[in-house]
Length: 166
Length: 358
Image (cartoon, one colour):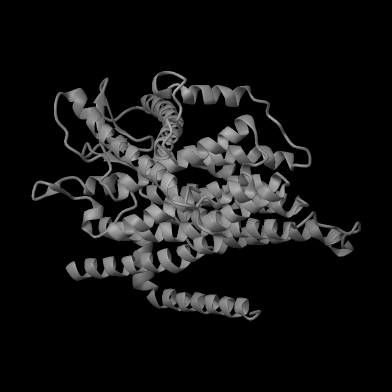
């Protein structure tokens, strides 16, 4: 009961934030909505018992990446977005039915053909830091290391691009 | 004895009220201590007029903040302008909920640890708290940047904007060194639970060297943490976001009365939280000699903990009275080129030693 109420609250905040993100005209307001989405997603992870992922979601996404987004928007002093008065006609006609069809199909596939799952009990934490560390450094060691190398290459690429001007 | 839900909520509310009251009072008296100590460093007296030794000065200051005109400048982004100080203060006051101040106490037939998010493990009778306490504190601290960044941006003033830009760049950069300096302690203790980390540091070697993490080879980590913490809380010598010689007052230039006071309290609350974390992770939390009757035994750990906080507050003020402000490029260079590699080296060496012993 409690978990359903909590899930509905945070899911509503999450979807509301996502819609507000699209509706807002000012980039800062959109960025703030995105932070709300990240925060409520972290709460949903917590409800699923993934405490470590929830904390990391807050620290990395809400605390670091979005700070840089806000930083860049402030630095460039981006103003309000300009929108053309007339939208796309195709989107107006097909938008809502298309969205509904996609949602129904996804829901149907997930409920019928999704992996068999047992519901998580509120208050049981399966995704502890210990368990995730064990998975990363035992079962998924190679993918983990490959990802680290990929990120290292991306950092080096960013440094090279940034230094080109000098 | 396990408690029922009603008692649990009542105990939690009592703890929250006490914690907020103590924290706000501590902030007020840190300001008093700062004015006194900086005064004496500069061969002045500091506040002396209001009460004995100027002890009622914080009360007068608070009254002044309440009575002043709350001015909202024109051309600000009103919603965010009002939201920003609230955000800063909320984040600063929230993180104290996760700080364990003392071990389990027994009063009125109820056993509870002196920590808002703590509970008593019914199997062992010892205190326990959430497994990811440290991570949550780091998360809340990193959200505190938004209060400052949005305050500067929404004020629509160049000084505020520059202060906010400096603050966000500085806090994001130093968060890395801060976080990495804690990894050594985490490797040693193997848990994110603050209560468990303190429990692990109880006791002594040879009867006189306490088993604090700082004496287990984390002394470099301690100093990296301390320097990064100064930058995280925007204190001298890293107070570039509010450098008054260049930016008037930085991000809170356009704020007055209670809204300014909220930023002010948030900064001091953050200092106290950072000091709490330093004493928990490196200096053994509430560990210290405990003796005497039952009431003294319950209160002495809290006293030892508070003593460490006062020590850190004094260090903050001492540094402020002694060191000049850094230049901005020096600040960034120091964070990225000195603290960051040093913290990485500390992790590497700690991990090697732990692996060697295992």
